[in-house]
Length: 443
Image (cartoon, rainbow, N blue to C red; front, side, top):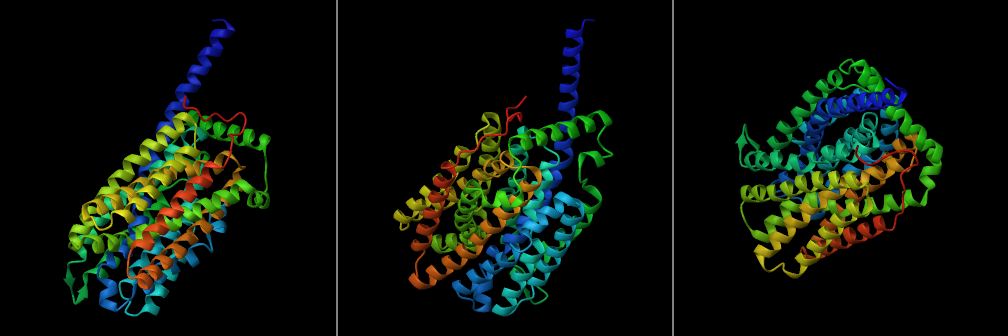
Protein backbone atom coordinates (compact mmCIF):
# COMPACT_ATOMS: atom_id res chain seq x y z
CA UNK A 1 0.00 0.00 0.00
CA UNK A 2 1.51 3.34 -1.04
CA UNK A 3 1.61 6.43 1.17
CA UNK A 4 -1.29 8.09 -0.66
CA UNK A 5 -3.55 5.12 0.03
CA UNK A 6 -2.45 5.00 3.65
CA UNK A 7 -3.30 8.69 4.08
CA UNK A 8 -6.72 8.16 2.44
CA UNK A 9 -7.36 5.17 4.68
CA UNK A 10 -6.37 7.16 7.78
CA UNK A 11 -8.71 10.01 6.81
CA UNK A 12 -11.57 7.58 6.20
CA UNK A 13 -10.90 5.92 9.56
CA UNK A 14 -10.86 9.25 11.39
CA UNK A 15 -14.07 10.28 9.66
CA UNK A 16 -15.72 7.04 10.80
CA UNK A 17 -14.49 7.54 14.37
CA UNK A 18 -15.68 11.14 14.32
CA UNK A 19 -19.11 10.17 13.06
CA UNK A 20 -19.49 7.55 15.78
CA UNK A 21 -18.33 9.98 18.47
CA UNK A 22 -20.71 12.72 17.36
CA UNK A 23 -23.67 10.32 17.28
CA UNK A 24 -22.85 8.76 20.63
CA UNK A 25 -22.51 12.15 22.33
CA UNK A 26 -25.76 13.39 20.79
CA UNK A 27 -27.72 10.30 21.82
CA UNK A 28 -26.29 10.36 25.34
CA UNK A 29 -26.53 14.06 26.16
CA UNK A 30 -29.25 15.75 24.11
CA UNK A 31 -32.26 13.79 25.43
CA UNK A 32 -31.17 14.45 29.02
CA UNK A 33 -30.43 18.13 28.37
CA UNK A 34 -33.85 18.32 26.71
CA UNK A 35 -35.47 16.83 29.83
CA UNK A 36 -33.65 19.28 32.14
CA UNK A 37 -34.84 22.27 30.17
CA UNK A 38 -38.42 20.99 29.99
CA UNK A 39 -38.51 20.76 33.79
CA UNK A 40 -36.90 24.19 34.05
CA UNK A 41 -39.31 25.84 31.64
CA UNK A 42 -42.44 24.32 33.16
CA UNK A 43 -41.41 25.57 36.60
CA UNK A 44 -40.50 29.00 35.34
CA UNK A 45 -43.71 29.77 33.43
CA UNK A 46 -46.29 27.89 35.50
CA UNK A 47 -47.07 31.22 37.15
CA UNK A 48 -48.58 32.38 33.83
CA UNK A 49 -51.18 29.59 34.01
CA UNK A 50 -51.64 29.98 37.76
CA UNK A 51 -52.54 33.61 37.11
CA UNK A 52 -55.75 32.55 35.39
CA UNK A 53 -57.03 32.15 38.98
CA UNK A 54 -54.31 33.38 41.34
CA UNK A 55 -54.70 37.14 40.89
CA UNK A 56 -58.47 36.90 41.29
CA UNK A 57 -58.15 34.75 44.42
CA UNK A 58 -55.50 36.97 46.05
CA UNK A 59 -56.77 40.34 44.79
CA UNK A 60 -53.70 41.19 42.66
CA UNK A 61 -53.88 43.87 39.95
CA UNK A 62 -52.10 43.43 36.63
CA UNK A 63 -49.32 45.69 37.89
CA UNK A 64 -48.80 43.55 41.02
CA UNK A 65 -48.67 40.38 38.95
CA UNK A 66 -46.32 41.96 36.38
CA UNK A 67 -43.96 43.21 39.09
CA UNK A 68 -44.01 39.83 40.84
CA UNK A 69 -43.10 38.05 37.62
CA UNK A 70 -40.40 40.64 36.92
CA UNK A 71 -38.82 40.46 40.40
CA UNK A 72 -37.62 36.98 39.45
CA UNK A 73 -35.18 38.56 36.97
CA UNK A 74 -33.53 40.89 39.49
CA UNK A 75 -31.92 37.99 41.33
CA UNK A 76 -31.75 35.81 38.23
CA UNK A 77 -29.10 38.09 36.72
CA UNK A 78 -26.87 38.25 39.82
CA UNK A 79 -25.17 34.88 39.37
CA UNK A 80 -25.41 34.53 35.60
CA UNK A 81 -21.81 35.41 34.81
CA UNK A 82 -20.12 33.75 37.81
CA UNK A 83 -22.38 30.72 37.32
CA UNK A 84 -21.35 30.29 33.67
CA UNK A 85 -17.68 30.59 34.67
CA UNK A 86 -18.21 28.00 37.43
CA UNK A 87 -19.51 25.57 34.80
CA UNK A 88 -16.49 26.32 32.60
CA UNK A 89 -13.84 26.03 35.30
CA UNK A 90 -15.36 23.74 37.95
CA UNK A 91 -18.25 21.36 37.25
CA UNK A 92 -21.43 21.57 35.17
CA UNK A 93 -22.71 18.38 36.78
CA UNK A 94 -22.54 19.67 40.37
CA UNK A 95 -23.65 23.21 39.62
CA UNK A 96 -26.67 22.28 37.51
CA UNK A 97 -27.74 19.65 40.08
CA UNK A 98 -27.58 22.36 42.80
CA UNK A 99 -29.64 24.73 40.68
CA UNK A 100 -32.40 22.22 40.00
CA UNK A 101 -32.81 21.01 43.57
CA UNK A 102 -32.98 24.55 44.98
CA UNK A 103 -35.44 25.85 42.39
CA UNK A 104 -37.70 22.82 42.90
CA UNK A 105 -37.93 23.55 46.62
CA UNK A 106 -38.73 27.24 46.04
CA UNK A 107 -41.38 26.36 43.43
CA UNK A 108 -43.15 24.10 45.93
CA UNK A 109 -43.11 26.87 48.56
CA UNK A 110 -44.65 29.32 46.04
CA UNK A 111 -47.84 27.27 46.30
CA UNK A 112 -48.37 28.63 49.82
CA UNK A 113 -48.23 32.42 49.20
CA UNK A 114 -51.14 34.59 50.38
CA UNK A 115 -49.98 38.21 49.97
CA UNK A 116 -48.26 40.32 47.33
CA UNK A 117 -45.17 40.57 49.55
CA UNK A 118 -44.96 36.78 49.86
CA UNK A 119 -45.41 36.47 46.09
CA UNK A 120 -42.58 38.94 45.47
CA UNK A 121 -40.38 37.07 47.96
CA UNK A 122 -41.02 33.69 46.35
CA UNK A 123 -40.23 35.03 42.90
CA UNK A 124 -37.11 36.76 44.24
CA UNK A 125 -35.82 33.46 45.71
CA UNK A 126 -36.75 31.50 42.59
CA UNK A 127 -34.65 33.87 40.47
CA UNK A 128 -31.66 33.32 42.75
CA UNK A 129 -32.14 29.55 42.64
CA UNK A 130 -32.44 29.30 38.84
CA UNK A 131 -29.72 31.82 38.04
CA UNK A 132 -27.07 30.66 35.53
CA UNK A 133 -28.96 27.51 34.49
CA UNK A 134 -29.31 28.56 30.85
CA UNK A 135 -25.82 29.99 30.20
CA UNK A 136 -24.42 27.04 32.13
CA UNK A 137 -26.19 24.66 29.75
CA UNK A 138 -24.90 26.57 26.72
CA UNK A 139 -21.33 26.42 28.04
CA UNK A 140 -21.78 22.73 28.80
CA UNK A 141 -22.79 22.04 25.18
CA UNK A 142 -19.63 23.80 23.94
CA UNK A 143 -17.61 21.23 25.93
CA UNK A 144 -19.12 18.42 23.87
CA UNK A 145 -20.18 19.71 20.44
CA UNK A 146 -17.98 21.03 17.65
CA UNK A 147 -18.82 24.31 15.94
CA UNK A 148 -20.51 22.58 13.01
CA UNK A 149 -22.92 20.77 15.36
CA UNK A 150 -23.45 23.49 17.92
CA UNK A 151 -26.48 25.29 16.51
CA UNK A 152 -28.36 21.99 16.18
CA UNK A 153 -27.43 21.06 19.75
CA UNK A 154 -28.66 24.43 21.00
CA UNK A 155 -31.83 23.95 18.92
CA UNK A 156 -32.48 20.68 20.75
CA UNK A 157 -32.03 22.50 24.06
CA UNK A 158 -34.35 25.32 23.08
CA UNK A 159 -36.91 22.96 21.55
CA UNK A 160 -37.67 22.07 25.17
CA UNK A 161 -39.35 25.49 25.53
CA UNK A 162 -42.30 24.77 23.24
CA UNK A 163 -42.18 21.06 24.11
CA UNK A 164 -42.66 22.02 27.76
CA UNK A 165 -45.77 23.92 26.72
CA UNK A 166 -47.15 20.73 25.16
CA UNK A 167 -46.85 19.10 28.58
CA UNK A 168 -47.38 22.09 30.85
CA UNK A 169 -50.44 23.59 29.13
CA UNK A 170 -52.83 20.62 29.45
CA UNK A 171 -51.43 19.76 32.88
CA UNK A 172 -52.05 23.32 34.04
CA UNK A 173 -55.53 23.30 32.54
CA UNK A 174 -56.37 20.22 34.60
CA UNK A 175 -54.71 21.31 37.87
CA UNK A 176 -56.31 24.76 37.89
CA UNK A 177 -59.69 23.07 38.06
CA UNK A 178 -58.96 20.83 41.09
CA UNK A 179 -59.52 21.63 44.76
CA UNK A 180 -57.77 19.12 46.99
CA UNK A 181 -57.37 19.36 50.78
CA UNK A 182 -58.83 22.87 50.80
CA UNK A 183 -56.10 24.12 48.45
CA UNK A 184 -56.96 25.83 45.14
CA UNK A 185 -55.80 24.22 41.92
CA UNK A 186 -53.26 26.95 41.15
CA UNK A 187 -51.51 26.13 44.44
CA UNK A 188 -51.27 22.46 43.48
CA UNK A 189 -49.82 23.61 40.16
CA UNK A 190 -46.76 24.98 41.98
CA UNK A 191 -46.49 22.15 44.49
CA UNK A 192 -46.71 19.24 42.05
CA UNK A 193 -44.55 20.85 39.35
CA UNK A 194 -41.74 21.63 41.79
CA UNK A 195 -41.20 18.00 42.80
CA UNK A 196 -39.73 16.77 39.45
CA UNK A 197 -37.00 19.43 39.59
CA UNK A 198 -35.73 18.05 42.91
CA UNK A 199 -35.82 14.46 41.63
CA UNK A 200 -34.11 15.23 38.30
CA UNK A 201 -31.55 17.38 40.11
CA UNK A 202 -30.41 14.35 42.09
CA UNK A 203 -30.27 12.25 38.90
CA UNK A 204 -28.20 14.98 37.21
CA UNK A 205 -25.45 14.63 39.79
CA UNK A 206 -24.93 10.99 38.86
CA UNK A 207 -25.73 11.03 35.12
CA UNK A 208 -23.95 14.06 33.64
CA UNK A 209 -20.27 14.02 32.67
CA UNK A 210 -18.39 17.31 32.71
CA UNK A 211 -16.02 16.82 29.74
CA UNK A 212 -15.20 14.22 27.06
CA UNK A 213 -11.92 13.26 28.73
CA UNK A 214 -13.86 12.16 31.82
CA UNK A 215 -16.46 10.04 29.99
CA UNK A 216 -16.23 6.30 30.75
CA UNK A 217 -19.03 5.68 28.24
CA UNK A 218 -16.93 6.94 25.29
CA UNK A 219 -14.54 4.42 23.64
CA UNK A 220 -10.93 5.60 23.71
CA UNK A 221 -10.70 6.29 19.97
CA UNK A 222 -13.87 8.41 20.00
CA UNK A 223 -12.78 10.20 23.16
CA UNK A 224 -9.39 11.06 21.64
CA UNK A 225 -10.99 12.26 18.41
CA UNK A 226 -13.48 14.54 20.20
CA UNK A 227 -10.91 15.99 22.61
CA UNK A 228 -8.58 16.70 19.67
CA UNK A 229 -11.32 18.28 17.51
CA UNK A 230 -12.42 20.63 20.27
CA UNK A 231 -8.79 21.53 21.00
CA UNK A 232 -8.07 22.27 17.33
CA UNK A 233 -11.13 24.53 17.12
CA UNK A 234 -10.08 26.37 20.26
CA UNK A 235 -6.53 26.86 18.95
CA UNK A 236 -7.84 28.15 15.61
CA UNK A 237 -10.13 30.57 17.41
CA UNK A 238 -7.32 31.81 19.62
CA UNK A 239 -5.04 32.42 16.61
CA UNK A 240 -7.57 34.80 15.14
CA UNK A 241 -8.47 36.62 18.31
CA UNK A 242 -7.93 35.94 21.99
CA UNK A 243 -9.96 38.61 23.77
CA UNK A 244 -10.00 38.77 27.52
CA UNK A 245 -13.30 38.79 29.33
CA UNK A 246 -13.11 42.57 29.77
CA UNK A 247 -12.30 43.07 26.09
CA UNK A 248 -15.24 40.89 25.16
CA UNK A 249 -17.53 43.02 27.32
CA UNK A 250 -16.30 46.17 25.56
CA UNK A 251 -16.70 44.74 22.03
CA UNK A 252 -19.31 46.80 20.13
CA UNK A 253 -20.68 43.67 18.49
CA UNK A 254 -21.26 42.03 21.88
CA UNK A 255 -22.97 45.18 23.12
CA UNK A 256 -25.29 45.10 20.10
CA UNK A 257 -26.03 41.45 20.76
CA UNK A 258 -26.85 42.32 24.37
CA UNK A 259 -29.22 45.10 23.35
CA UNK A 260 -30.87 42.89 20.72
CA UNK A 261 -31.38 40.10 23.25
CA UNK A 262 -32.72 42.52 25.85
CA UNK A 263 -35.29 43.84 23.38
CA UNK A 264 -36.20 40.35 22.17
CA UNK A 265 -36.72 39.11 25.74
CA UNK A 266 -38.69 42.22 26.69
CA UNK A 267 -41.25 41.02 24.18
CA UNK A 268 -40.74 37.27 24.53
CA UNK A 269 -40.89 37.05 28.32
CA UNK A 270 -43.78 39.48 28.37
CA UNK A 271 -45.60 37.23 25.92
CA UNK A 272 -44.76 34.02 27.80
CA UNK A 273 -46.04 35.25 31.16
CA UNK A 274 -49.06 37.09 29.79
CA UNK A 275 -50.27 34.98 26.86
CA UNK A 276 -52.79 32.93 28.88
CA UNK A 277 -54.24 36.20 30.19
CA UNK A 278 -54.11 37.80 26.71
CA UNK A 279 -55.91 34.82 25.19
CA UNK A 280 -58.51 34.68 27.95
CA UNK A 281 -59.36 38.38 27.60
CA UNK A 282 -59.40 38.35 23.80
CA UNK A 283 -61.57 35.27 23.47
CA UNK A 284 -63.51 34.90 26.74
CA UNK A 285 -63.16 31.10 26.56
CA UNK A 286 -62.69 28.77 29.54
CA UNK A 287 -59.35 28.23 31.28
CA UNK A 288 -59.16 24.70 29.87
CA UNK A 289 -59.78 26.01 26.34
CA UNK A 290 -57.04 28.63 26.83
CA UNK A 291 -54.49 25.99 27.81
CA UNK A 292 -55.53 23.83 24.83
CA UNK A 293 -55.09 26.69 22.34
CA UNK A 294 -51.59 27.34 23.69
CA UNK A 295 -50.50 24.00 22.24
CA UNK A 296 -50.52 25.67 18.80
CA UNK A 297 -47.57 28.08 19.30
CA UNK A 298 -45.72 25.26 21.07
CA UNK A 299 -45.99 23.03 17.99
CA UNK A 300 -45.02 25.89 15.67
CA UNK A 301 -42.05 26.63 17.93
CA UNK A 302 -40.72 23.06 17.91
CA UNK A 303 -40.87 22.76 14.13
CA UNK A 304 -39.49 26.25 13.55
CA UNK A 305 -36.55 25.85 15.93
CA UNK A 306 -35.43 22.48 14.61
CA UNK A 307 -35.72 23.45 10.94
CA UNK A 308 -34.15 26.88 11.43
CA UNK A 309 -31.31 25.48 13.56
CA UNK A 310 -30.62 22.74 10.99
CA UNK A 311 -30.69 25.19 8.07
CA UNK A 312 -28.49 27.67 9.94
CA UNK A 313 -25.83 24.98 10.43
CA UNK A 314 -26.17 23.74 6.86
CA UNK A 315 -25.63 27.22 5.40
CA UNK A 316 -23.28 28.45 8.17
CA UNK A 317 -25.43 31.61 8.33
CA UNK A 318 -26.57 33.02 11.67
CA UNK A 319 -27.82 36.60 11.31
CA UNK A 320 -30.75 36.19 8.91
CA UNK A 321 -31.74 32.98 10.70
CA UNK A 322 -31.92 34.97 13.95
CA UNK A 323 -33.56 38.13 12.61
CA UNK A 324 -36.30 36.81 10.32
CA UNK A 325 -38.27 34.95 13.06
CA UNK A 326 -38.13 38.05 15.28
CA UNK A 327 -39.41 40.35 12.55
CA UNK A 328 -42.13 37.85 11.56
CA UNK A 329 -43.30 37.65 15.19
CA UNK A 330 -43.28 41.44 15.40
CA UNK A 331 -45.41 41.76 12.27
CA UNK A 332 -47.97 39.33 13.73
CA UNK A 333 -48.29 41.41 16.91
CA UNK A 334 -48.50 44.57 14.83
CA UNK A 335 -51.30 43.04 12.76
CA UNK A 336 -52.99 41.95 15.99
CA UNK A 337 -53.50 45.59 17.00
CA UNK A 338 -55.41 46.15 13.74
CA UNK A 339 -57.68 43.08 13.93
CA UNK A 340 -58.16 42.94 17.71
CA UNK A 341 -61.95 43.20 17.39
CA UNK A 342 -62.10 40.26 14.97
CA UNK A 343 -61.73 37.51 17.55
CA UNK A 344 -60.70 34.57 15.28
CA UNK A 345 -58.13 36.71 13.43
CA UNK A 346 -56.83 38.23 16.66
CA UNK A 347 -56.35 34.79 18.22
CA UNK A 348 -54.59 33.56 15.06
CA UNK A 349 -52.16 36.51 15.09
CA UNK A 350 -51.43 36.04 18.80
CA UNK A 351 -50.74 32.32 18.46
CA UNK A 352 -48.69 32.67 15.25
CA UNK A 353 -46.60 35.53 16.63
CA UNK A 354 -45.91 33.58 19.81
CA UNK A 355 -44.90 30.50 17.80
CA UNK A 356 -42.71 32.21 15.17
CA UNK A 357 -40.49 33.75 17.83
CA UNK A 358 -38.90 30.49 19.03
CA UNK A 359 -37.05 29.87 15.77
CA UNK A 360 -34.51 32.65 16.34
CA UNK A 361 -32.90 31.20 19.48
CA UNK A 362 -30.50 28.51 18.11
CA UNK A 363 -28.87 30.71 15.48
CA UNK A 364 -28.61 33.64 17.87
CA UNK A 365 -26.70 31.66 20.50
CA UNK A 366 -24.32 30.29 17.89
CA UNK A 367 -23.10 33.83 17.10
CA UNK A 368 -20.93 34.48 20.22
CA UNK A 369 -19.23 31.06 19.93
CA UNK A 370 -17.79 32.08 16.55
CA UNK A 371 -16.36 35.33 17.89
CA UNK A 372 -14.63 34.62 21.17
CA UNK A 373 -12.17 32.37 22.98
CA UNK A 374 -13.53 29.69 25.31
CA UNK A 375 -13.31 31.53 28.64
CA UNK A 376 -14.46 34.83 27.13
CA UNK A 377 -17.37 33.09 25.40
CA UNK A 378 -18.40 31.43 28.68
CA UNK A 379 -18.51 34.77 30.47
CA UNK A 380 -20.18 36.43 27.50
CA UNK A 381 -23.04 33.91 27.52
CA UNK A 382 -23.67 34.97 31.10
CA UNK A 383 -23.40 38.67 30.26
CA UNK A 384 -25.75 38.50 27.28
CA UNK A 385 -28.23 36.32 29.10
CA UNK A 386 -28.13 38.23 32.41
CA UNK A 387 -28.66 41.68 30.91
CA UNK A 388 -31.08 40.29 28.35
CA UNK A 389 -33.12 38.63 31.08
CA UNK A 390 -33.73 42.05 32.63
CA UNK A 391 -36.17 42.33 29.74
CA UNK A 392 -38.27 39.97 31.83
CA UNK A 393 -38.55 42.70 34.47
CA UNK A 394 -38.98 45.54 31.98
CA UNK A 395 -41.46 43.74 29.74
CA UNK A 396 -43.68 42.19 32.39
CA UNK A 397 -43.92 45.27 34.59
CA UNK A 398 -44.51 47.54 31.57
CA UNK A 399 -47.26 45.29 30.23
CA UNK A 400 -48.96 45.21 33.64
CA UNK A 401 -48.64 48.99 33.89
CA UNK A 402 -50.03 49.56 30.38
CA UNK A 403 -52.93 47.21 30.97
CA UNK A 404 -53.91 48.97 34.21
CA UNK A 405 -53.35 52.46 32.78
CA UNK A 406 -55.15 52.02 29.44
CA UNK A 407 -57.64 49.30 30.41
CA UNK A 408 -56.78 47.72 27.08
CA UNK A 409 -54.28 45.24 25.62
CA UNK A 410 -53.48 47.29 22.51
CA UNK A 411 -50.56 49.24 23.97
CA UNK A 412 -48.98 45.98 25.19
CA UNK A 413 -49.27 44.42 21.73
CA UNK A 414 -47.70 47.53 20.17
CA UNK A 415 -44.80 47.35 22.63
CA UNK A 416 -44.14 43.68 21.83
CA UNK A 417 -44.27 44.31 18.06
CA UNK A 418 -41.85 47.23 18.31
CA UNK A 419 -39.18 45.47 20.38
CA UNK A 420 -39.22 42.35 18.16
CA UNK A 421 -38.69 44.32 14.95
CA UNK A 422 -35.98 46.49 16.51
CA UNK A 423 -34.15 43.42 17.86
CA UNK A 424 -34.18 41.82 14.41
CA UNK A 425 -32.75 44.96 12.87
CA UNK A 426 -29.90 45.08 15.39
CA UNK A 427 -28.94 41.46 14.69
CA UNK A 428 -28.83 42.16 10.95
CA UNK A 429 -26.50 45.10 11.61
CA UNK A 430 -23.82 42.70 12.92
CA UNK A 431 -21.01 41.36 10.77
CA UNK A 432 -19.30 38.35 12.34
CA UNK A 433 -17.08 35.85 10.59
CA UNK A 434 -16.11 32.45 11.92
CA UNK A 435 -12.46 32.14 13.00
CA UNK A 436 -10.07 30.93 10.32
CA UNK A 437 -9.55 27.19 10.44
CA UNK A 438 -12.86 26.36 12.10
CA UNK A 439 -15.23 24.71 9.67
CA UNK A 440 -18.91 25.35 10.19
CA UNK A 441 -20.02 23.39 7.19
CA UNK A 442 -21.36 19.92 7.90
CA UNK A 443 -19.14 17.07 6.79
